[in-house]
Each structure stands twice: as structure tokens, then as C-alpha cells.
Length: 149
Image (cartoon, rainbow, N blue to C red; front, side):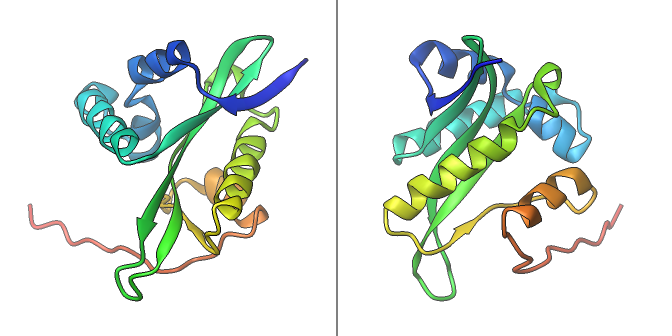
């Protein structure tokens, strides 16, 4: 099994856009058809502002991706590295692709002189949280909600 990590080709970006929303469905439990166009719009917006996709390829097939971006800490106004999206296709899971993608993304953000990287994760996504903690991420804040329905 040959695993390669690199910047997404145009064809891979097209495939990512076609699959847009699947990751959000898994992360939120809301059917992806309701998110596909929103995710595509978010991807485009981020790309227009300098974000890009790193992909994991296994035997020349797209196995997963991470979108590498930047943001601002709105309290300190300091620039920070940002991970918009992490997704590994179901048939490729359990092989370390997400770990390799995240390590590469973190390294590239460090090379750009960011001293902090952040991402969002839903509390019920315990598997992702374990991975992020293994890589050194820690809680920064907690978003809470109150349903008024």
C-alpha cells in the first residue's frame, strides 16, 4: 500500500466538490443533500482567500483530504492556522490517512510562521476528538446551544 500526501490536483478538487457535504453529514447527523451546496460555497470562498486541499492518495486513488486555511483569533487579532475540513473515505479509514494529512497540514502552517492551529469538532465525534488530542490539540472553548423549538 503506497500512501502519498500532496496538494490536490484539479481533478481531485472536482471529486472533493462532488463529495461535498458527506463529511458534514457525518459530523452533524444532518443529511448531506442539505449541505452539499453550502459546503461547495464554503470551499470556494476559502480557496479564493488562499486555502487549499491536501490529499491522501492510496494507489493513485483519492483516499481523503484536509483543507488548510488561515483565520484570526478575534480576541487577540492574531493570525492563526485553521483546518476547515478533514475527511477520509469510509473504504480507506483505519489506515492512518487522517493522521498523516493533519501532520502535513500542521507542518505547512508552522512553515508559514503560524504558532497556533485550530479546528472545530462536534462533541459527539469522539473518534475525531481522540485523534486531535493525540496530535496535541486541546479544548479552547465550548459552543453551547439552547433549542427554542
